[in-house]
Length: 414
Image (spheres, rainbow, N blue to C red):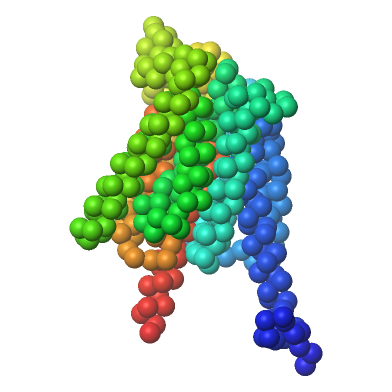
């Protein structure tokens, strides 16, 4: 049998070499798919086109869907079936058909990531590396665009707010929260000298989140950081570790505070910050503001079990619902709403059940779970049903559920 000599002195048979090449191709394919999720200036974005091909090819080659993710699959399909039901009450399907199609696609991405993570949880490291790379690039584009430091800076800002390679600052900022939290986790849990790159990354991501002037993004980052610190304090009984954690947390807060003070020295930054820092804006509490529209929308939804029509809320009230639960009612019918709520609580339940177990993938699960909790909270003031990274979060959590099942089965077999 012919053998291929490697520079390291080891030798691989042709079969082993083929497997190694296939592993590299698979890793690059996954990395690129996650990386492209950070660039959605136009739709369909490269992410959609690429992931459709990747999922299709993987399915043809034998994508295995573990039974542990069947609740995810079933509830996502029911949720989108609700969108089809709502579409049936509409006279014009043109925009609705595209919208429902995108919803189905995003659901399939969640199933896909859950399946490949359950099959090989080591892929989580690859996924987070790709996500961090995308976040750093799109974050830097937002920062440089905000200060007009690159050609075509307007492409990366909107209404004087950084948006990176996204269409909206309110999606840009939440997208950055998962890699920012992952960097914070590394800083708080690893030796100081090994976390200097993570510190630099965290500063970039936090500054980009700040320049988005997204209240949802700010709130999400703060909530997730607090939850992460609380989990680490609860999960580690070592007094020495807890003292170190508190010291590092204070240092991190101090560093971010100094960076904030420096940023506020720019007049344009200071004025927009003071305006956006108000908890309730005029368009929130006005007579027909966001919260009034929420009340009217829920009242209308209670009278229309099949929904009011895909994207019809915006044409009626002049603004989108800015509430994903209301949107589920109006755009996905009562069936879609019920499926969505059950999916949220089921995901929180299964994630929390395995969250405190010492596993190689626990840091990834922890960060994804906390950011998912944050998205559940901010969903009250923003529509997340078409956020690509939200479905990646679903995939990560349910993928870890599948990985835990495989772990327990191997343990029982010993």
